[in-house]
Image 1 (tube, rainbow, N blue to C red):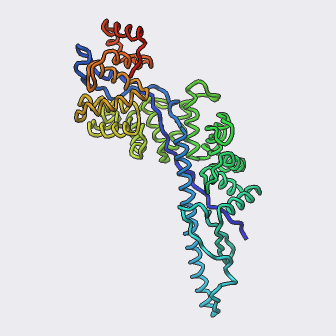
Image 2 (cartoon, rainbow, N blue to C red; image 1 turned 90 degrees about the vertical axis):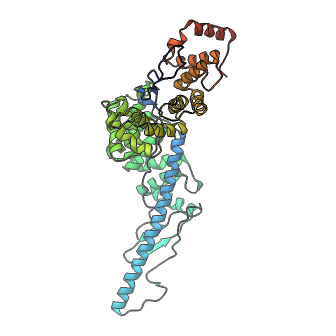
Amino acid sequence: MASPRLLLIQQPKIQIALIVGLAPQHAHSRRHPFFAVLATLSVLLTLHSTPGMAGWNAGNDEANRTRAMKSLRDSATRADQNAMNRQAQFDRDNRSSSTKSGNKMSGSNSGSRTNQGVMNFDSQTGDDGPQAVVDTKRVIIFRAETTAQLFTRLETEASNNNVDSQYALGALYYAGWGGKRNDVESRRWYLAAAQNGHAESQGMVGYLAKEGMGGPKSEVEAKRWLKIAADKGDTFAELHYALLIAAAIDGKSSIQYEPTLAASYAIRAADKGDISARALMGFFYLIGEGVAVDETKAAHYLRAPAESGDAPSMELLGNLFCEGKGGLKQSDEDCVRWLSRAADLGIASAQANFGFMLATGQKTEKDVSRGVSYVRKSAAAGHYLGQDFLGLFYYDGLGVAQDYQLAMLWLRRAAAQGFTGSAELMATDKMKKISAEIDRQNISPK
């Protein structure tokens, strides 16, 4: 009799948050007195070549675990349904065989079925694990297991070098099946399966090493395992291998920064439909990181993640619509739609640009109060464009009480981050005197 097996679980796709560093062009034209009239906004921003800003955080991992749990539950439900379908087919075949042979089978079918009792998995409870389906030549046996029984059986099989059970334990501990989230055990069993050549487990070992979960963080180990899995075509590993290499741009990594290599793996995952990889490739094509700058390809890759709810992709796609670039027809409606959605999802640069549009009535209906609110959020988040715009609003009294000291304080904060858009205004005699007074009184922004 074959041993029971947990159905293999598809590795869930990842929604990655890209934290994009933006360096805006001069986003407002100056007329004397400097900000009395706000004019044409240059919405499409020049991007820093900083793929290392493409990040992964605890929120991304938590969402990934949630998707893993859903995948497990879906697998359990499918296993139950498949098992019931197979039992029904067995009953039909058995009745047909009995009729042809003239033999009458007893109602209990005691010679053909053992321990029957199909229990549907309820995803709202945590007491019961997936159903185990055991095949023989003649019968199907259904065995309902509690979570404790499930883990005990899988650990026995995994300890006997059953790679499927090793992988299953890694996935169950990672997702927290039955309240048993344990990254140390997850990494242990994923590693066991990885050492047995299991591609998805190799990718997960690399990922956990990359993030320092369930054991020490190691870029070297992460790179080794992710590459092995990526070269076997594992989409998850392709994406994270690309991210690992791209992040080495900060110069603090123990691995080499290789943008062309990163792009070559990211595009594999992107072309297989991975939303996170498509977002990354859209970014790469905009800044020319590992690939030649190609705004048309950028727009192509950004659309799916934007439509799937990825806020940074929404902003970048909105920027392209604002300017009619990337093969897209210029559209104020699409420009505002995507930028506003990105702003509402907390993208600080989108908050600054969308707020500026609202405050000045460019590309959308004017709403000064709402516009100032968005710009203030961006400034409070530390984005230099929001700080600059807020400083200009205070200088001109747009939506706020005119206050030259607050104007200078916010402009200085933006300038401290390397933004020079308001350098001309800050260099006037009037603002120099205000700056000196701020320093003398040690005034801070309110």
